[in-house]
Length: 94
Image (cartoon, rainbow, N blue to C red; front, side, top):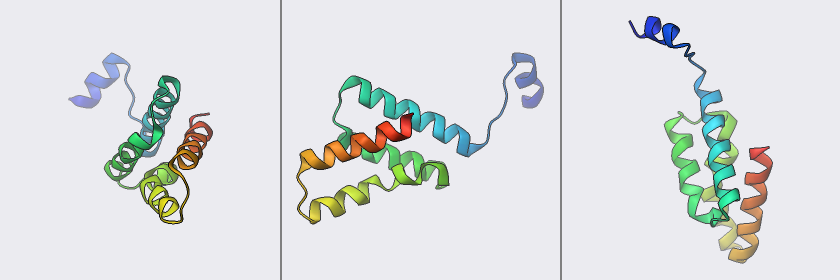
């Protein structure tokens, strides 16, 4: 029944990887446009990555938490890390 309803409503299913990229890009754009601290959202991308069954398309965002942790352990300042994460989000959101 669901396929028929979807057809009547003009809805289409898309692959999980494509859906994940769309959500991740929208989230990245919202973070960047709002001026919010991107470090506050790195777990959001990790969660999305896990829920997508580790979609390759967003693996660079899904591992940001670990990357940030490593950067902090090597002595990089939070401000440098924040700029670096923002640049990753900008590149992804294109």
